[in-house]
Length: 375
Image (cartoon, rainbow, N blue to C red; front, top):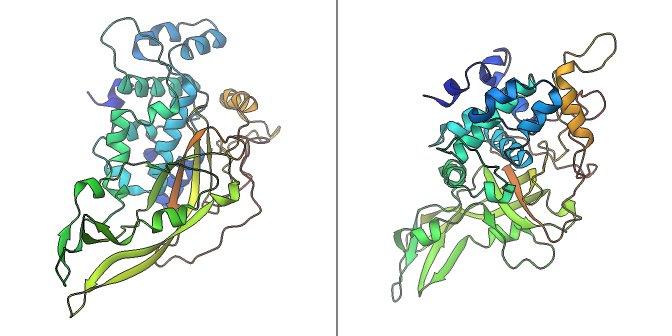
């Protein structure tokens, strides 16, 4: 039985809801990145009937919040949706069940949303008993779950080093073709900045991994694949402007020269911040391609007379009022997962980032309509 079949009647595939008009892929990507799965409860199959029989919304919400740290699961779903939006290669993941759930049309029915997120909980923490224990995990623990690692961090699109490269062995004058060893090619992803003391220049951090390096007496040529997405785990506490963008410059390949040497084929790639995930508190801030904070988007079908969102959005609005106000800058002891996306793709006009944007905007503002449309 498929994931969607097991929650039939609650799951709506967002890909079938997007009009097939002008640039449907762009529209889908925009919705994935700006329609967020709040509120944060989960309802597994074991408690579904009890949940649906609840006499009041308050009681139903208590049941939904009783079985997992919903904030961490929400942030995981936001991460999945962002990756699907900015990197279509993830749609060919080796384990697609997670992404299938992320394609749910969140925001239309809080009951449906709880059911879909309950299935995510069941996928990650299956139980064979009829007693479901509460799953209290941080977002930091969730991102290292074996299923997450297999579907996300092992995806080939995140590979950093080119496998086929060159080596000059001890006593030799010429470079010869060489396949990079696993211990160098299989870098642990997300990349973790170790021994961080003060602000870190991510551009220099990644650029210095490229070029000719001495390994056990051999000169090995390292070349970067310049992946479309770079996830980095780093400590907070440094100025937000210092992490909004960075550039990697170095060899993307090498070509042999007639005298037995090799010449680097150097490129420069710009990366921009698209998400900051608080691994301890389970919160997430997302950003547009110009690094402006994303304001959560509700359905534009608002009341024509009052301008008040429809009843089904009240839970989202209430949740937004109590959203935790944390920032990367003010958290020097916390670890964060930063998601960067390549910007200067060949053929795209480069536009410098603006310095007018701050780090944080609440998930929903005003009547829920969009404040910034810069996708």
